[in-house]
Image (tube, rainbow, N blue to C red; front, side, top):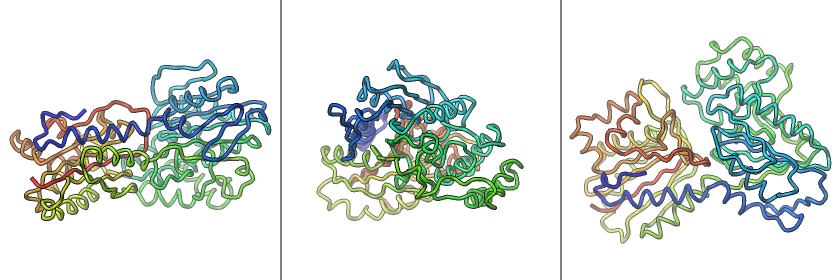
Length: 453
């Protein structure tokens, strides 16, 4: 929720309505029901038809932050045609569907339950025969929730390396390249286990570019990365020398061709695999744009592919907004700029926060430096999954009055930013956005509202 009492420019209510519309548009049940249409025994997904009558058995494996809603929506559509299903979720959920088995696993660092889920998924996939159909529902968080360390790699070593990459500011793409080369289920290996069954993947994308090889580390998709690239990522972040001997040996042997690579494009396994993106960051941004326009804003997309350090992105956006200060007075309507993607934070301080709260705090600092006199503005950034770092916040917002309130209470935004303590700063100013887990994930949403003061 946004504390409207903190809003001096009248933008807070609009900002909250806009981000709520965006998150509602990527609600997993809505996305599955809009994409998977059943007429009799024919299931139609974006123009592709699958005849249930021609199948002996139908299985579902659903994992990720949206796993419960996706799996349950698909089970309702399949109804009596569903043979069995597995749903792997990051926490307790209300369970529905007698044919669905649930496993609660850990995110963002995998645990023993994640390994149990990985083994169970391979078992179900391995049961599928040539006349069977396997639906795989994938969403953000799936890499941690469905884990099966490769032979010779312990879970503890994989957990430690994952945590070190996260703290070092590795992108999700880099993180998943490493994960795939330490896994017995990712990088197309789940599809391989199901071969020669027909596999249908439904994905809610939480990665820039909607790359199916990166979403949940691509368990049903071919992988273009290599052991050499995985090693290079560890070297880039200074983690190669400190990695366990088991991991280094696997990457070295893989680089020499002594360990089997992940499955590559053209592998016969993928001749019977079909994949569909049912929701992504642009789905949310389009809904945000529609709501903003209803509220009288001139809504403009800036990007759905934000990446890099949160502070650097904030500096760029703040400079852009400040440049509009002179022309804002001549605009007939207030402006709403929309952006998405996923930023990173290299943690050097001892504070608490996430990429979204850090982005907003850095934006607040930068707007204080910029020549933006006469401009009424609000900047908001949140994770569509309702989680920003290891905090209970989804993100934060700031406007022209936030810095003034901080000064009045003796808070120095720059000092908090230097300590990576954005959460504590906004908790004191009342600018946190707390939603709880939303059950979906299409990366982050940024909203910039401005007009002449």
